[in-house]
Amino acid sequence: MPNVADVKDADFETEVLKSDKPVLVDFWAPWCGPCRMTGPVVEELSDEMTDVKFVKVNVDENQETAAKFGIMSIPALYVFKDGELAGKQIGAVGKEELSAFIKGSI
Image (cartoon, rainbow, N blue to C red; front, side, top):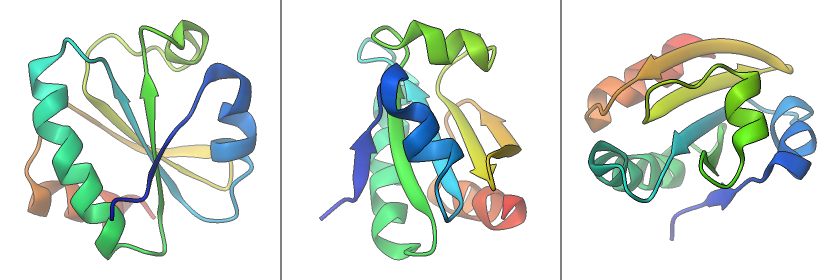
């Protein structure tokens, strides 16, 4: 069962920046083809990487957060650690590449 929470502008700080463990944020939109390909990969990894929190932010519904982090292209996968941006990956990637990116960022 995937463990990926939907995060809104209002709870981004609490859910991501104040999290006690590293967080992968998947910035996406429903109309984005590569985002729909990346979603299942993020969900698979959320089951396997229990030391990382996984969340999704719909950029259409949460433009304040998307603007704050300068999201221009999606999918944009950002890793936050201790409230700071630790790494970013723009564009669709496969499971192995995403896993290596997350491990390299935390």
